[in-house]
Length: 290
Ligand code: ZN
View 1 (cartoon, rainbow, N blue to C red):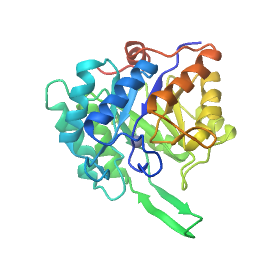
View 2: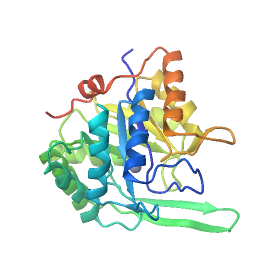
View 3: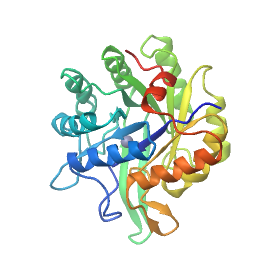
View 4: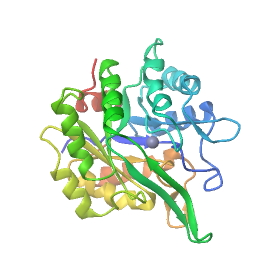
């Protein structure tokens, strides 16, 4: 089977230092985590940025610029910039980063995440007896269309994020009206409270719902990524790991770094006979626009 593309999602928008003190927060820390993840075997890094003082999720092009400049000076890892952002961000903020980065020499992202529909997004605290995150990730048709067109026009490959099965058809509608170009690349995001849960049946159903020629990857909340990632590797898919998705590397054992999470997934992939792809190989497999 072909090599596996491992993506490292190094910080995200919801993980906190309270959950894992090793979370990268400043552009320098995020860049170091990306470079180390590449050394551990990741071909792609999925980036969000944080307010360096408070750690809160932000979508500042300047902070992305700082991180990307450090990464590109030292590493060939492919860069996937989030346009999902974080709770409370406007659509303008979320997509604005793509043209802002593309306009500057050497900063164009290779990929960007494209949320293909709306879902409830929640975190429930049993201790508090309440939802500590009670958000709707709002992506109406007009905005998905605008995000897709902006990526295509800027030659940034959309990574279509699938939280619910119907979102695959949403992407096909966009392809049908010319806003997305085949071959499509999907990321199944499993285990979010409000979206599809992490089960083998869900993974198989999603993978079998894709158009022919599509590539796909899976990520999942928490330690579930290791068994479901193994299933994805065994069935021809790709995988994402990182502190965005989970703070543990094993039961009750906090991850020391993103690179440690990547290393564990590399080990699984190698045992299954699919060594990790290099960034150049991943670029070919994903048909990145030139
Ligand atoms: Zn993300």
